[in-house]
Length: 172
Image (tube, rainbow, N blue to C red):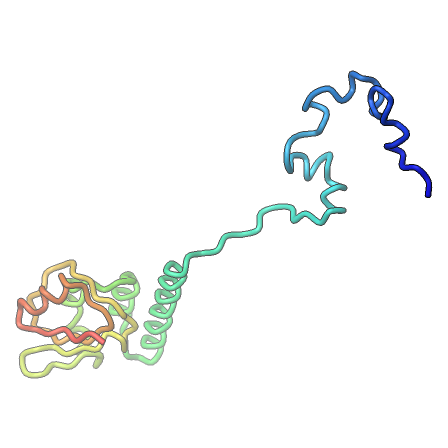
């Protein structure tokens, strides 16, 4: 078996590196790490199979859920409008609010009653917000109408405001 080249040149002063001035400091190595991967070290990157460029970002699950629920809400509202269950005013009003506050519900409950999406039982309005596409009821606004609301989630402030007027909130 023949000798390796490095064994041959071990005794020499620069071990095959040419002049002693050529391999002095860090300036001759072409940068640290992956520097020059798209420039002067490009062929090395291809041979070694580096992934070049940006490779994306994984969106957090709760953000994906929010976007999906908002998209589902808009689809539900669109279907209700196409079926004739929502007029233009109610559609635009609800579409501009991805999360429904008790004040907003208080403003539009009579309109929803006219359209058949809410019912009036004696002196209180009754509504299931999941039929409109809302899963959450928030507590901002003023409530002066008695309502029975069925919703997947309601904040404590929303429940407090509705019950203060004599209404009720049923959470699933």
